[in-house]
Each structure stands twice: as structure tokens, then as C-alpha cells.
Amino acid sequence: MDNENQDVVLVGPVFLDIVMAGLDRLPAAGEEIHGGSASWAPGGFAISAIAFSRLGISTHLFTEIGADELGSVLRKRLAGEGVELFSPASVATTNIAVALNWNGDRGIVSYTQPFYDASEAAETFLEKQPGLLVMSARHPHAKKIAEMAHRKAVPVALTLSWHPEFLTSRTLQQIMPFADHLLCNVPEALLVTGQTDFRRALAILSESIDDVVVTRGAEGSVALVHGEYFEEPGIPSVMIDATGAGDVFGAAYLTAKLRGLPVEQWLRVGNWAAAQAVAALGGCTAAPRWVDVERFLNTEVAGR
Image 1: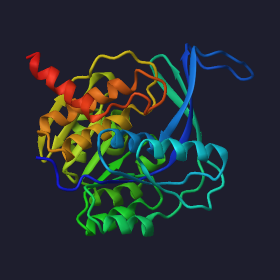
Image 2: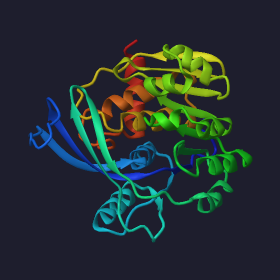
Image 3: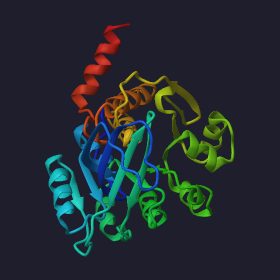
């Protein structure tokens, strides 16, 4: 049975992503090279927000989008995707990221405006007991907002990002006690725990968090949910752009939980959604809708 309240509140930065693909290498200093394809797309937490909304979840995004022309483009796109946006009017410039895809992976160069304190605005929504709060653990106000949600019995999902100084900081350790879900990739899990084996890292992270997921790219994903181990292989896909794969995975994984699917299907749904996402330029361009997920699950059952 589906959960009674499926609203999701997201807190994290949004970018306008400029995506370059079809590169076989990066340019040397002073050199210009040409990509095989290029596009723009909403980035950062806009990917998660759009992915949740397409999966039928009522989505409320607290972030910073500038009053410039790029911001207008992002606002229009988010509204068209059914995402309710909360952004202070005082932000002048929109965050920009350039994603460069080569050799089956990608690197990102980004420019980020200062974060604003969304705790007061988010508290109004947390009073309504949404189904989930999803936020970047690196957000400077993450601890305050996560602690607030914890007091109001709103489940908290934390996402990590590759920032070595933060991942090894006391700040992250202070946020984790308020998390119900933690989503990270293998390098992040290893750095946070100081381990060399992702399964050992998973076990350590699960000592303080009930639901920990470690994504493994094309190899799939693993999770420990209330002490029970789950592992699912990756779904074959044509890799066009790896940007946002983890964000789409996380939205699909958590939506499967919110919709009451059996726990053994959460990873499967997440892996499949991520495989759809990497097959197009832009993190949310090919993010699936819930009807697509249902079709995938029904086809899988019929094929057994």
C-alpha cells in the first residue's frame, strides 16, 4: 500500500548545466577541441526534483535561483515539470556547471552562489509532515534543517558529493545521527569510512543509519536496510552522459519506498531509472515517469 503522504521536500543547490559529450579527451591549456554533441539542462537538485515529480511525487524545492535570464529559463522548466519552487528574490546570479563527458565518465566545472538559510521557509512544510526530506549533506544549513525534520518525525535522506575535505570532516559526522537514509557512491563511502572495501564501508555507515545505499555505476548498487543486505546488478545502457545518474537513482529508489514497493525492488527500480538517465544528454532529460517504472516491473515479472 502507498504511504499516506508522498510529498517530498528537497533542499540543495540548483545549476544550469551545459553538457558536452562525445569527447575522447580533455583539452590542453590554450587548446580548443570539439565535442560530438552538446546541450543544456537543469542540474544539481533540479535533477532530483524533476525526477521525483515525474515519478508522481508532489515535490517542493528550496534552493537559490538567480533573477537573471538563466534563472528565468530554469524557473519555467521547473514549473513545467510540476515542481513547486522556493527561492529568495535577493539572488542575482544563477549557478552554472559545465559537464564534460569522456571515456564513459564525466568531470564538472561549476560556479556556485552562496547558500541561503532555508530553515525558516522549510519549517512550514515540515509542519505538514511530508513523506521525506531530501537534502545535500554539504549544505551549510543541513544540520539545522535535518535536526528540525528529525524532531518533527519527518524522515531525512542525505546525499553526498565528492568533496574530500567535507567527507572527512566532523561536520558530516554531526549530521548523520539525524539521517534515516544515506545515498552515496563507492569513492564517497570509502573516504567517509577510511575503508578500502565498499561492503565494509556500507556496514560501518549502517551502524548509525537504518538505510544506506552505495551506488557502483554500471556494476549496480548495494544497500543495508535495517541490517538486511541487498545487491542488484546494473542495467545495461548506452552511456551518453553520466551527469545526474545518482540523482535519478536516488529519486527512483526513494519513490519505490514511498509507494510501498517491497524493499527488494528499491534498488532494482533505482538501477533501471539511472540506466535510462545516462542514455541522454542532461541529468533529467530521460528521467522516467512512474508508468515507465510499472511497465519495467511488469515486463520483468512476465519474463521470469
